[in-house]
Image (tube, rainbow, N blue to C red; front, side, top):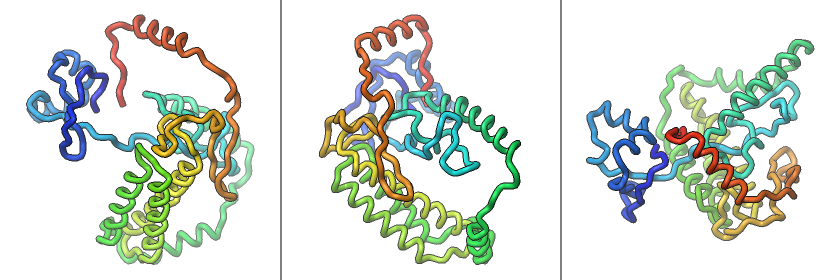
Length: 290
């Protein structure tokens, strides 16, 4: 991944992205800020200046997730969540390296809380109907092979393309509605298939779950009629102070939750000055880029 470079993007499309011009960037600066890129190319004997550096957006991080409290508890007794599958840590956007509090802080808290709960609890209650359902699905497959048929490959391709186009960087009501229709169609087609291998059972389950998550994301984005953080609506390009709240999804559908302290204001000039002072204090250090 390209880090903090002073190069310029050339208005030239190439293989689905744009070309980055780093001719004004010194070799030392490039290698300092992009160690993984350099290491990968050096292993192959490739000079980064001899090839076009093509940039394209990618799905990097999921900022929603299961709602948790301060100790990573969910609203299901005995279930804890931490990391990328837990929501509410980052707000409107995820800053660089913020996976640290998600994993190290909430993972630590979740472990302690879960351990204490387990020490004082009796035998866990298991829903036998769920177990029976999965037992039936597992016994229905005829092969332990991890291969999947073209039908499942096609559904996975449709899912990736549909979500990337309609639920990507730039969103509109029309695009989100198309995503919802496409996910419903994919889910129905998946349900009509009968997995015959272990690989197909895994693919079928993943498609079902990704359709659920994609539907929740699209409905939430459709409800939020503003742009904020990583959520950009082309038909609602401005932020709306009335929308400083979290969108949730549960058994009763979509809902919104007010954010505690939402009325607070911050002096951006003071914030910028503090950030500049911190950067000056660690001169020569480079930012970790994930």
